[in-house]
Length: 585
Ligand SMILES: [Cu+2]
Image (cartoon, rainbow, N blue to C red; front, side, top):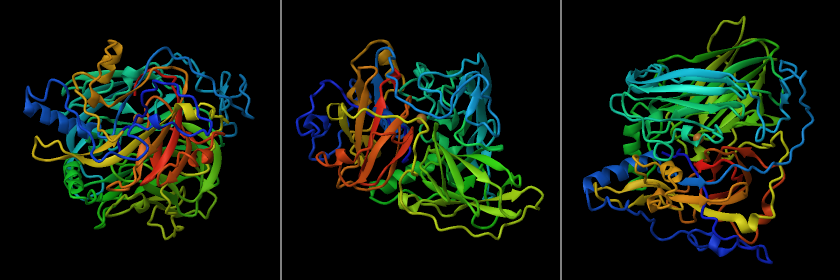
């Protein structure tokens, strides 16, 4: 699957001084500046290869599915975050309370101008939810019942709501008879709560059938996100839902329409599709296309069955809609006929608003948009189109109906605008907070990470596995011994297959050139996501990052900030983040 949590980094062992020419030192390339090695490496977990080949096979295969493009990031030491500089025109004071005409305010001294890296409300409130996972069937688009793994018997699962600064406490009961699980809270910073991140193999063992765990963490940021199973391909069968942390906003609006989930949908289970995708990739062909796109869990199917979802707009009012792409394998573009979007967030980051007809969402990305109901009252198509320019494929398309209240719901006759076809993040994504990322340490701190898809010769099951590698290596973790266990027991003998990159120094800026190597088998864009931190996107480009000329093109002055971005197919993206949250990410 193309979506898997990323983490970056490498061993920052030597503080190499920048050369006079400000070139990137060669030792900062994990595999050397000449590009990728001829074969990817896969190292067996010590002590298991000979003792039980059957067990080793099973573990290699399953953990490759689980985290095929993950690597562990460990940052040790106390959190001593370096404050980033910020400016804002909205001043927080106690009389600044949130309302339709003062969304920049929040209350009690907090507002859109609060530096949420440093400070958030202490509400003293704990919000509790219980999520039960069951193995059942579902039929969201009328094509027929199929096996589904659902949260509280809903697709998508229930939305978690909390206020900025609340403690969120979610009890997860695994009533799946045949699956382990863990729930990851995508984009949630988990400041000093790494154990609550919900990543099998990194921060916890899978929750066995019948087991229950209560996750607890603080909403230090606000906006829109989602939770999903982090166990193998499981979330593709329905184990996900929205997350809303209420807080201030960079634009006013009257009504909040809540989360609007966008997802690809397959008529086979995620596990069947993964097997098929692996077989296809072994022969150099593409993964199977999805069968449909669901909007808030529904759509008609290609044969005309099923139902369109409906959203009611209040004439003359402005509406906030929280877009989330929860797909397994598809980047998706959306628009609403006759109603441009005013975009106010990139993931959990408030941005300077801009207006656009179409929004492209990589898997895991969120954009909150404002829609003004200022057209002739009636029915309007909401369109969700698979982004073929991102190498995504789907046999159908997403449609739902937005209706002005007072109008009878009917199939619209509206037409849309032509969708763009450039597979990259929306722009301009200017964070509301002006942040200057220091450039002085770039040449001494930057590292390159090669990310690519490949077939690894792990042949104990008579097949090779297909992986997304970071440093061209897939993570292969012993579920009984998550990375975090090594950290908390100060055991530094990490197996090489844990693909771990150590960041031993807290409070420093680190810089990462993520490169899909030239000569890649399949030059396709890939979502890049980091846990426990937002990253700043200093630049993107096609082809190979040129260490002599590309650095000058990077933007350190209020660059886009978020937790999920696109790595262009056959190209590069340069990210920066501060080591201010200890843990294994
Ligand atoms: Cu995440």
